[in-house]
Image (tube, protein in one colour):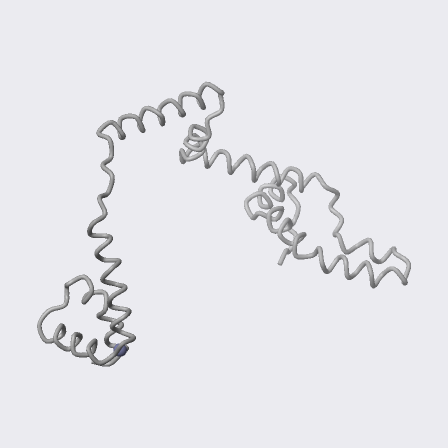
Length: 174
Ligand SMILES: [Zn+2]
């Protein structure tokens, strides 16, 4: 056995879990190697301390008192009128969550479609030539965000409903 093999078996050796040929081999190495011998002594001392250590016994009333304190805490939070658990539980119901999501989507669509139908890039043509580059850079920066909104506003079903009710030929959108 060499030092690195000894390292991997040192814990087993120090806690008496090494047996047979492995134990003999380890003990032989320890007679030859002072470094491993000192390390093994350290391990053995720690193992001894842990073995002798009496863990304090938990009071038989610990669980009952813990439950009591948790119940008291929950009661005091409910007395405040706002309960995150209840709110999250309400949101976690599939029907409520779907309705909530629908309200959010319809709300954002309403806000977006109520805006004037001008494309954000259109005003550039009316700007003085000097400011155009700066304007274009700003627009390029904002474009991905605007495209996200566009995607929502062009939500297929709503577009179809609009064009059908207006009885106009559908605009070809990419
Ligand atoms: Zn060694």
